[in-house]
Image (cartoon, rainbow, N blue to C red; front, side):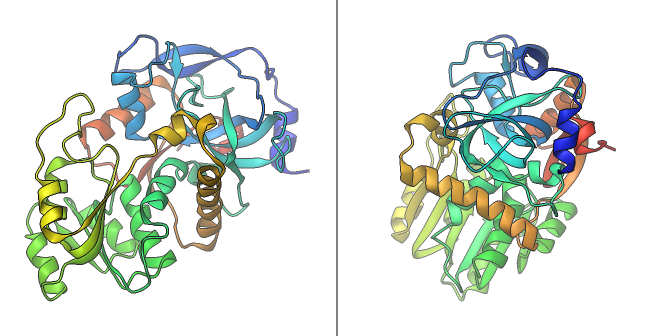
Length: 375
C-alpha cells in the first residue's frame, strides 16, 4: 500500500461535512480573501474527489474574486490547481481508485482546494483533468503545473515545428517559463527567444532553455530580433503577458505569414471590464500573419459542454505534463512555498496582482501531513 493510502486511512476528520476554504464571501469583493465555510462535495458521474495536499497561485484566482465573471453565488472557495490523494470516485470515473496520488485541475464552476486551517481540504475534478502523479514528482511541484502547463500546451501544441524560431516574452513568469521549456526541449524549436525585466526573470528564462533573452526595459527587442533573423522575424510568438504594451510590441516581431498567439481575452480586452483600441490587428494584417487566441476559460468553467475531442486534448496535456516533468523536460520553477492560510495566500496573490517580482510559481502546501511543510 502506498504512503498516500496509509495516510488517508488514518484521517481523524471525516470526508463528509464542511471545511474552511479560502475565497470570497461577497460578490466582487476582491482581495483580501476570507475564510469561507464550504461543504465537502460528493463526486457524481466522471468526477474525482481529491484530498488536497498542495496547490499553487494563479492570477485567475484574484480576478475571479474581483469580478466574479462566472456569476458564482458566494461563498466561493478558490485554489484550482490540485495535487493530492483520491478520496472518492463518482460513477464512470475509471482508471483511478481511492488512495491514488493524483494531479488535477478543478472546475471554475465549483470550489477549489485551498484550506484556511492548513488541512482538511477536498475538491472535485473531472476525470479527464485528473492524472496519476509520478513518484519522482512531489505534491508541491506537481501542483505548480496544471493551469500554467495547460495554458502553454494549448498555445504551442501542434503549432511549433522543429527548427522554428519562437518568441515567448515573459520567460520568467508562471506560464512563460513552462512555455520556453516546452518549445525548446519538447517541441524542438530551432531558436527560442524570450524577455524579462529583472535579472532573476532573465536568468530563469535562460535556464528554461531560451537561446536569447532580452531586457524589455533596456533593449529594443524588435530590432534585436530583426538582426537575429536577418530581418525576417520569428515564425511564432506566444504572448501570455496580459499586457497591451507587450501585445503591440511582440506583434511587430512576427514574420510575414507567421503566427501570433495570445493567451486570454487578447488585445484591447486586458481589463475584462472595458474594451480599448489596440493596434495589434492592423500590425498583423500588414504582415499577413495569423492571429490565434487561446482562451481556456470555457474548458474550466463549462466542462460538461466539451466534446470528446476537447476532453481528449486536455487529457493529453495533463498526461504530458506528468511525462515531461518526470523526464526533466518541462519542470516548474517554484520560487516560493507558502502555508495554506488566509494571510499567506492574500500576500501571494497581492504579489501576483502588483507584479511584485514573482518568479515562476508560488506553491501552497494545503495539508502538511501529505504535502510536507511549507518551509
